[in-house]
Image (cartoon, rainbow, N blue to C red; front, side, top):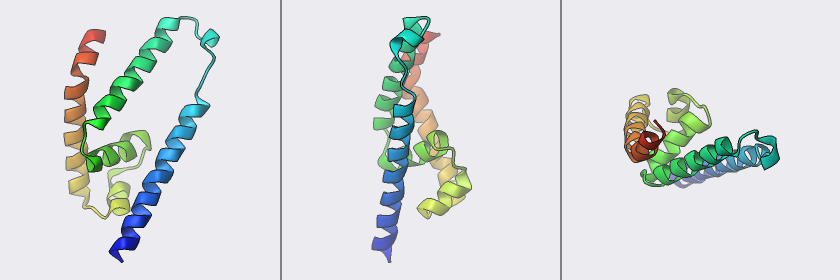
Length: 112
């Protein structure tokens, strides 16, 4: 039973990541479509900084953060998907946001 749950959870995560990648591919735009190359550069820099910051999180925290803020699931939905309590999901989200804010602080400070 536990093995089946783990398999299904991993399959759901992989499907979510595939969906994110496909959405990201759909957003590609020719550089000539941007009136100012600087805007495109900042967007790319921010994505790279966020990817680096996400990689510093524990796997469970990165998973919950991604489901919450990139996939748009609610805390109760995430709790049901991952077999966690809603309180634990809220704590993980809070800690992940705090750590990401710390990791992105230098990047955000440079942009302010």
